[in-house]
Length: 240
Image (cartoon, rainbow, N blue to C red; front, side, top):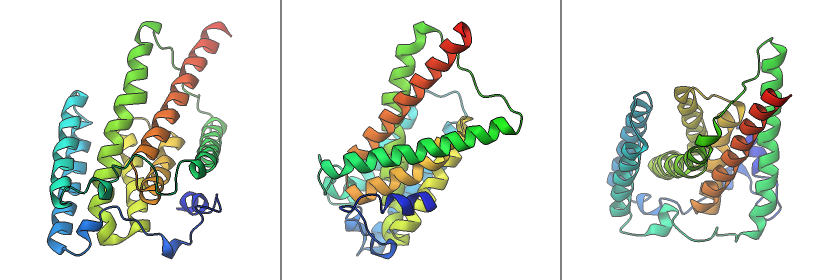
């Protein structure tokens, strides 16, 4: 949670104390306990199902179907108000304030990655080397920078945050979301430091901006940088 507290004070236009963090995300669930209950049940079912799916040799189409079904339920529960689900074209603060804060969040995540990998190396472990076949790079780009961000943002930001935010509040939602997202990457077999802390920042961005587009873009660009680093490490390993 330290990283999220830091994120909340990185920009004057977005600075806000912890207890004052509010969001219109899921506002239609606030006054109806039955809607909150259904949303929570859907969120739990989706997370459990997705964790199981990720342990099986199943394509992303099944996860996409899961996300679409859950989203359809939320659209119904919110009376078709897509903005309350985070489907708005712009952050409520506008795009300009988020340029600087996104860069600072990226630096914070990069610092966590450097510290994590440095610690891993000091413990005597080797850093991973990725020797990707050039023929599959377009597939990797599509998977890492398009498919995975879309699926994970709708499953773990939209579905999970909507299931929790009007029941446990924004900050507890961010904490739970970050833990679930980190756990997902343990299931993936990719518990890198950036994946362990990224969910906290992405959930905060979603609830604060009230649009899924912001964390989706941040996630996609982050994965693009990760892919570039993987390709560079493989090249240097082969030609160093």
